[in-house]
Image (tube, rainbow, N blue to C red):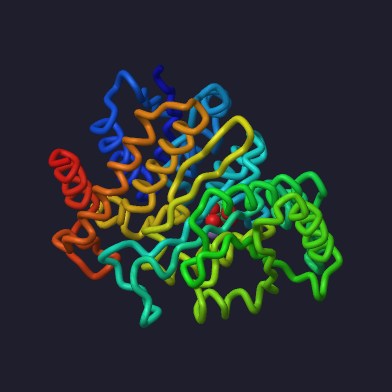
Amino acid sequence: MSYRIATIAGDGIGPEVTEATVRVLDALLGPDVLMFEWLDGGAGHYQKTGEVLPAETLAACRDSHAILHGAAGLPGVTYDDGTEVGNDLHLKLRFGLDLYANVRPIRLLPGVESPLRHHQPGTIDYVIVRENTEGLYASRGAGVVLRDEMASDSLVITRKGTERVARFACELSRRRQGAPRDGKHRVTVCDKANILRSYAFFRRVCDQVSVDFDDIERDYAYVDAMTVHLVKRPDFYDVIVAENLFGDIISDLGAATVGGMGVSPSAELGDRHGLFQGAHGSAPDIAGQDAANPIATLLSGAMMLEWLASGHHDERLSLAAERFRLAIDKVLEAGLHRPREFGGQAGCRVFTEAVLDQLGRT
Ligand code: IPM
Ligand code: MN
């Protein structure tokens, strides 16, 4: 079987990190297994054509086995309402393909120093499952602005949207090895249920779903307290489920505790489609300088192989993903090619070459 990968490089560092990832995926499986279809989209494309996500790109994504994306967004490229154009590439794909679970692993990799003292690889290893199609983002492009005196956006929590993401989180915890601190399979519901009825509803629906998972420990954290816990006791967490905006915020904090956005992969999954991209932005200030850290997108590529392997029962892809992850870990462990994000000298290309070289030896 071969797989059509809709590939959208996007803006800023997007082309560099996408090319890095395609090179490694190609080295792992070759063009007969993974066929990359390069597609337009992003703020730069919008500047040229007025379209951030061309219809043919959306159609190709809909028709693909998976979507690989670099990054999107350019400063100053905004709509009249002040919101950024580039972000619509992600949002139109998320809402258009119903990618309801935004899976963001937060793992301290070997050879990477956490800003949290006393933490070594293995003690920070959890996954944030961010609801990805409603919450405060449901108001994207629909908020009220009155006479330049008042503006409001609504927070939308639906039963269907919450049930499916809560179920996803519990099933993910079942597949993992438990929290580093105690090995417990634990799902933490992160919300603000003490103050807002919408979040109390989110928590109630998560609780109702958890009845089917009595092997998974239930845990709760108000989002303000969550920011303290992710710094003070990250090893306590296994899987965290959160509404869209809260998931957006705590996943960046989590990424910072394991080295930065350059090591933060993501898989945005629906029942039929998957979008794989680093959780970082387009970093236009370092674009075109070979300075980007490709690890977030590389790891997103490994997540894509794992997702395809599981959906198509294709052992070739899970083996390739294992080799992919091992190669990244080995390069980091050797410490010879530390990405600039970690204070090293290795640019995007050098780090990618080191991963390819590692693959050549395994
Ligand atoms: C993210 C980003 C996006 C978001 C932007 C680029 C639309 O911050 O994926 O975390 O706000 O979700
Ligand atoms: Mn974000």
